[in-house]
Length: 395
Image (cartoon, rainbow, N blue to C red; front, side, top):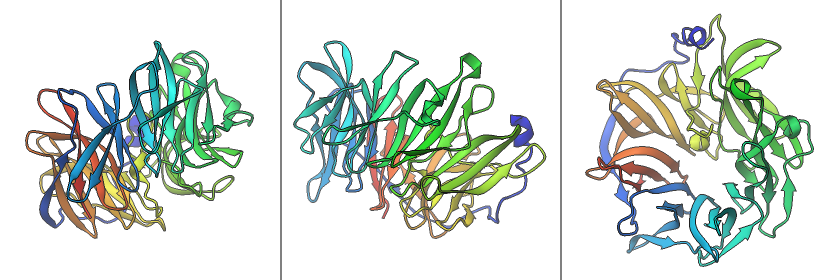
């Protein structure tokens, strides 16, 4: 099936050129790290530019102060904890994650100041909402388990009790858009028959998005969910036995409406998709204004909030590209593969490509986020295998 669908991707979805104008490159700045740290990675960025991550199993937070540059703050560990990792950060800069306490993994919420950490019933935090709710993995031994949404005041919403949520033995929170708005992955099946399906939750009602991940086909991909319940997804869909690969935008919460952007079948159609990471997430591909990015026929593309598709032209020497992050106003971070096999990154905005370069001696490995304020954060690495977060001001 994969080969048949791939063969149907030759026609272009929309017009696009072979080259694009460029302006001088923007070089990133390394964020400060603890002395001797080897693995330092950022995982999330707040709208105000607070960066959260982990340095060799120690939770960290970064912020940029006028006249002082980037400053690092080690986050406090709970009493008795030996290590900690950060999973996300709220709009106010509160981090959520996990810590090892007396040899047992525990979910953690850090204060706004970062000077205290409170344990939350559960083993880990998988997602942090804009206004502070946590997606907490709560019960069951691997691979089984459940999750709750936990508010700042400690009140909990168990993620069960609807046909869509109860259709599997494992539920994990992918993203949170608001106090009662989230995307939850529900896993079912055994061995090579295992499937994972995304479920949209909004105010107690649920809706299964019509794509799935499986061993035999491929990984479905879902963006973060916006506060109004908007989410974009791509992946294989089974409509009464008819398999197709779909890129769609869901609007209106639950029940809402699915707006199919593109559908490819064995008999024809173009292949268009989001670009996923290992967690089935294309978290930053959907901008707050509803525009989003991905790829069509192996070339980076952007879809406006109204759904108009725009091909992002190749720069000289590129043979494939994809959009990996989007911000409001049609700004897109493009990851491209060059003819020699190397990767490059650039900002695309108003038809202009601006190259993004890592600090000397480093290469960009993973884009974390592009904020509406024009802050890009990515993790970079050097030839010794050391990783560090870096930041670019892209306007």
